[in-house]
Amino acid sequence: MTDCILTLLLLIPLLGTFVIALAPSTAARGLAIGLSGAMVFLSFVLGANFHANDTSMQFVQKMSWIQAPFPVEYHVGIDGMSLCLVILTAVVTLMAVLASQTIGQNRSRLYYAMVMLLTSSIVGVFISLDLVQFFLLYELELVPMYFLIAIWGGPNRSYAAMKFLLYTFFGGIFMLGAILFMYFQLGAAGAGVRTFDMVELARQGSMLPRSIQAICCLGFMLAFCIKLPSFPFHTWLPDAHVEAPTPISMILAGLLLKMGSYGLVRIALGFFPEQIAQWGAIIIAIGCFNVVWAAVACLVQTDMKRVIAFSSVSHMGFVLMGLGALSAAALNGAIFQMISHGVISAALFFLVGVIYDRCHTRQIGEIGGGLASMMPCAFYFWMLAALANLGLPALSGFVAEATVFYGSFTSPTAVADPGFVRAWIVFAGIGVILTAGYMLWLLKRLFYGPENPRWVGHLADMTINEKVVASVLSAAIIAMGVYPLWVTSQYAPLADRMCQDASHRNSISMR
Image 1 (cartoon, rainbow, N blue to C red):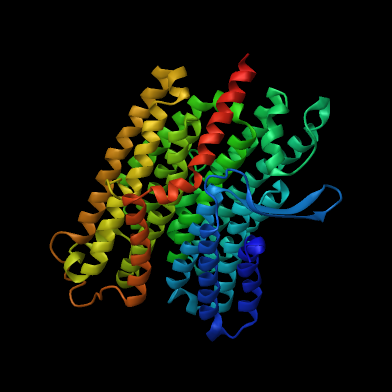
Image 2: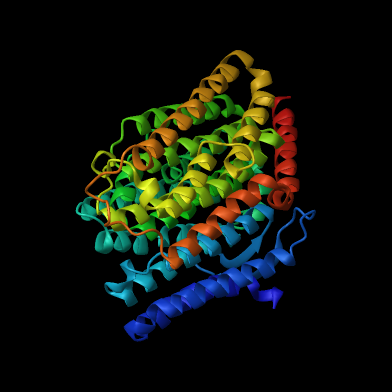
């Protein structure tokens, strides 16, 4: 079964889209849970059969797909980083489907079909080894996400959905331009062989002239930074989160943003390590600015969802820091941040939804505090997720941030330009302090203080279904924080090799 397990992971949600669309409305939710559960099972089978010390692609399937005008192949495979993101996708999708108990009652077949189509495109991005196939699946997610926000979103859902579509669509244009430009430049003047094979492109990217590398790398960087999102391309994210229904916010923050960070590591760093090394100080500076600026923005928000949305922008800055540092420790931390943030953000958006379902408002001032005595179970889960988000030791957020800071401060980029880079890294430390401030402030405003008479006797604590979702996500946060090695061991050899290759290629190009 393992020979075709990646194809099964891609096809199950894709075929499930059509099965759910044709099934009776009463069966839609059950089918979505079953399909998501099957993906979780297959992803765990994948992990059990994965060889962590092998940095090459595993479970590879390859066959010819399109011959003209370009040779495109169906080509899938995973390494340690892909494996972790595939498992994350399966788990978060199942939790999002379970969290859709009330939302999915409205046009349930269309809703769950769109969720399955979205999941298929996300999985496809993480396992694709053909660049055109990667691009097609990367862009496919625009369709279901647009409709999931536009149909089931809040009052300004049309504006938010269109803004999301325009931003990410233009990001795709930059990527398509970079793909085609790189393809036609390969083979010219003896610079490699024209191909869309991502494994081969990781070997041949350095054969291109430095000016061509810079143009291609910039195109990919712009596309992925819009999806990440990074300043100044981040403004679509808070609007999309505020208007999206709770389960879709879980997928948006937990999975879609990881498509951008994954692309930065897999393509930008994988294809053009010398260019990333040359731009390393600037990338770190942008990442540090993201961390602090978005944390400052969190302090002035009055909507719970906007606080968590800007917090996501802040935490994705650590991925840019790890990418620009080009040290094994920093890159390991950046990849861990992708996974950790995927779980923490999904938990926080879910818990925001728990309060919203009862209070019918996300305005912190209107809720008025005192919820701890009325919703004690929700308070405990909120406390855990908030502490993980601010980086408390023994929780997953601490592992990622501490590793990125250490790896960045001692990285080749910092050694080459210590004054500029280390000043920015110290500046990013302010963001950690601000994160503690706005998360504790949010907890205080929601759960502490006197009870709001408006809610006394009217608020029920979490249901069994909600406790299951919160418990699974909380268990993952604790497990990764207490014993991160069970995650890092899967991709650490890959991160070490990528940094060594980047350092080696950059030293050769500088001679």
